[in-house]
Every structure is written in structure tokens, then in C-alpha cells.
Image 1 (cartoon, rainbow, N blue to C red):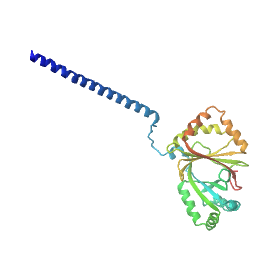
Image 2: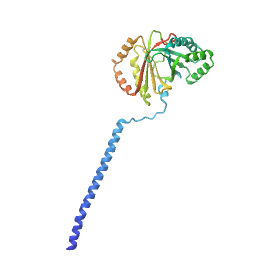
Image 3: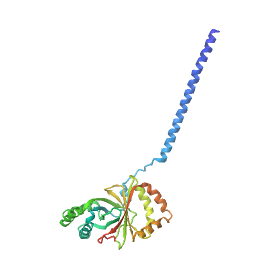
Image 4: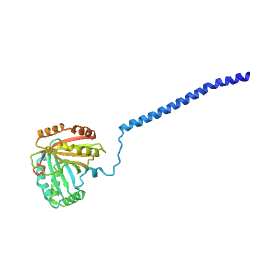
Length: 285
């Protein structure tokens, strides 16, 4: 009898611990399942916001630039002392055509302008080097031994507040800049893209450019290789400011233009517009 009572008492005392252990194991398993579910949910949520990167086999310059030419472009921005702008323009009009026309220089002056609206007292020059980097190196080497150019450069330097340049390639789907009769005004729209988005920009604008050809306003499209990187420049020509307004507004009435704008705007970090007037020597008038 005593032994039976002792055994029953032991079972009674052990039962709470056994039940408590079972409950603990159950809570642990539930927590493990819950943790796994949360991890799965987090992974699913991340998949919505994290961009998957497709491996590329080539640089974007090779994917976006024209393959049939090896032209390199140089875009120059010269901020001129306000009191020197007329003298600066006169000096450029005397010297730059000699470089443009000189057969010993494998380069051409595409266009030269003064900024009308945008940054004031600014000159903008666009050069093309037929043959790419070797042509650029050849021109720079020859100019360093050209006495007239070195004197021009010294005189020009005394008129400037600052200057910068960029080396550019031309988008394969844009028009190649060719001489134009005037009078025209020119708009240079410059876009600082988010790093890693150049291919997306090119894919969208390869379609978008079709909406902007009705009035032959598209002059050229370029992207930077040296200088400020992930920069895109679109050059447009219009008869006047009202023509610019009408042409740009007409694009919004074409199905598909609004969608392309919607997708390209998030790729931009910063943008700028310059309205420019060509100098008399500019092939783009």
C-alpha cells in the first residue's frame, strides 16, 4: 500500500514537468515556423524592391554607340568674363575656322554657341574627332606646336573665369549632327543619370526619339566617357522659342510618349536646359 501511494505521488509530481516540457517544445516549434515564415516573407518583400542585375558581356559604350563610325566628340564649356564676351567671340571666329578647315587636323567643328538662357556669359563648343582617341591625341599634339593657336590659347585664357570639357560618344539611334542653315536657336538638354542606368536610358530613348522627328528638331544625342560621368546631352534645333514650345507640346498628343517619359524620369538625378545662339562661324546655324 505504501509503495503504491509513493508511486502514484511520483507520477503526479512528474506530470506537470512532462506537460511543461511538451508545451515548451510546442512553443519552440511554433516560433521556428513563425521565424521561417517571416524569413520567407522578408525574402519575398525584398524581391519586390531589390533590382536583379543581369550580367553584361560588354561595356555600355560598346552597346550604345554607333558601330559604323569611330568618331569621338568633345564638348567644351567656357565661362567668360562678362566684359570680355565680345572679344572672346571675335577671337574664336578668327582662329577656330582654321582648325576646322585645316586638312592636317582630323577634326571638325560641329557647332559653337553663346548661351542665351541658362548660365550667362558662357560659350559652348562641340568638336568631332574622326578616328576616336588617336585622332584627338594627334590634334592636341599638332596644336601644341602651332604658334598661332598657342597665342590664341593664352589670349583666351585671360578672358575666362572657368572652363570644363567632356569627351562623348554618340548614341546609335540619334541623328548624326550635320550642318544646318539658319536662323535657329539650339537647346542643349543635359541629364545627370543615376549610376548604372545608362542602358535603360538608351533602351527607352531608342523608342522615344521617333516621337521627336516631325520638325527635324533632333540634332544629336551623346553620352559621356571622360569628365562628368553618366551625363547625357540631347541637342535640339528650333526656329524660335514659340516653335520649341509647340513642338514639345505636340509630342504629348502621340500615344506612347507619356509612358516613355514616365519610365525615364526616375533615372535622372539632375537636369539642365540651355538655350543657345550660334556664332557666325558655326556649321549649325
